Image 1: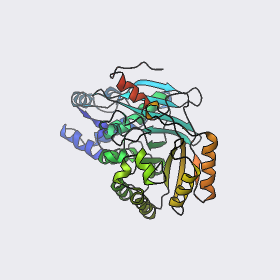
Image 2: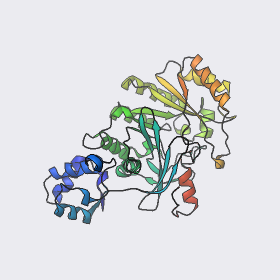
Image 3: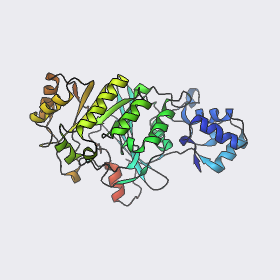
Image 4: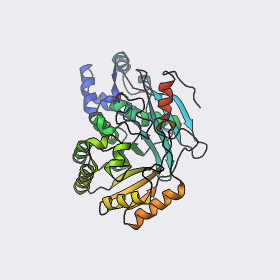
Length: 360
């Protein structure tokens, strides 16, 4: 069975023509999958969930599609809803038994979602739950965009901002990431502005250079988390392949080529990378670069053995960076009363042997 959400519009046109149908039907189907095609009380974000709902598509074609294709609908195994701020954390089940996570967040500027790009991760970052079970497989374009549609369907609200910052390393799945981004931006699809999309990488240098060429208007975030190679290598094995000098050179080239500001994600770990000596070294490395530092108090995962930094120390770290001319903010902490750290729900699922959990 072909997941139609894996196909670009032109690919869907070829698929429909191979079924002996006129290609204009493809655009009708495409819009039903991604856009709110209802009206009045029937209007609802998230696209349709069955071919039978595509009312302007001939019944004969709908029957053909049901025999050879599906709509790649993701099923929530678990939904955690924060009583504090309405943040929703989803654990979605895939057809092969794997599970992935997404987080729906509400901001003043509109709804945002953090999506996963892989089932698991092979990057091995010490503080992250996402890679503790290793990499199972890459997600397809349809499985990545399906997280957005499923969240819209569940909440009944449109999502206007997307961050690819969930489980997995996006640049380790670059081909499918690229296809997902094109679907996201397609006027007949979700029609999302490039500038409302952010992709985060742990520092895959060739991916950063390709990304600057292919998607110069999409925002880029770098998981930095350390001011030098010694600390970064102890936390993030990727630094052994792409040392910080090489990584930051690629970042400078990116900003020159795209004129886009890079966000450096910096998770503060108590006693590891959160001292004033670390803030000073970080400021020296980043001074003069078109960038912004997003300071993140560690959302501790007990298996990592690492602990979060006090709020006071986080604020002092931020103030020092600002004083040295490096813009820095502290990430707003959403969903503190649910399993906030990336990968926690999935890790629990894997350790329970893949058994379905009840929704909260």
